[in-house]
Length: 136
Length: 140
Image 1 (cartoon, rainbow over the protein chains, first blue to last red):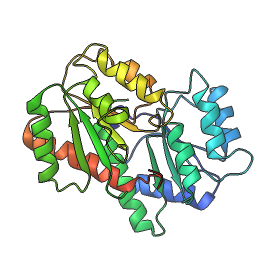
Image 2: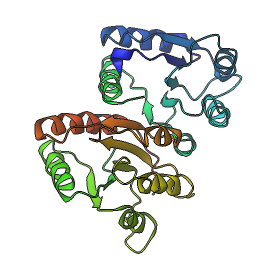
Image 3: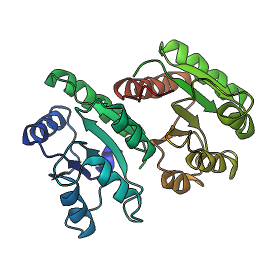
Image 4: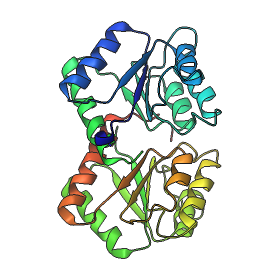
């Protein structure tokens, strides 16, 4: 997958978390173009108005202002152009209801953000290996 | 993720055996069940041979059995208790006849795979690592 460098959209409101994802990508040599939206509303605008090229992967936070991750997912899955995109939830929410809602909307994985950056690096490395196996 | 039940669907006995062997070799903590066809798989998901708890993950090659594999995925997605199952298509077929249909059903991954043993161990260990970093609900 990585050879083709599919676009990745990160939907995340916390600037520190955005920085951490960027750092983890760079440390793991993930060269895919990474776009960032601060919440669900902004992500939908970017996707609907074609402000960014259509991503094959979305990394999605759950707790965000304006429109949270689950609300965003619901709208996305009803949109013909967006419904096939692979979504990986990356969140600090350990709520069972969030996990159930996310899997009912067929996310590819629900990942709890580890507290330490080192552990986060390992999770991102695992994700990279998995993405490289997959054809999108 | 803690130990999860995984259902493998493949109509070739040797494939099932190779994958089972590889699961042991990579020391996966997950429990692998297998079905030799889609009907048998359905009985294990929603019939007389129901696996308890319901598998969190299904592994299937949808390119071997014309439409049957895709029909099974459709049935899973339309069933209230099964629709959230993570589906990984693993295929060693050169023909991607059902790839688009599978991607339309929001599978978690479409993975071309070699059944040579050293490669199979690598593929399954990457998948196994991935399963270990994702969380599932505690609901049965």
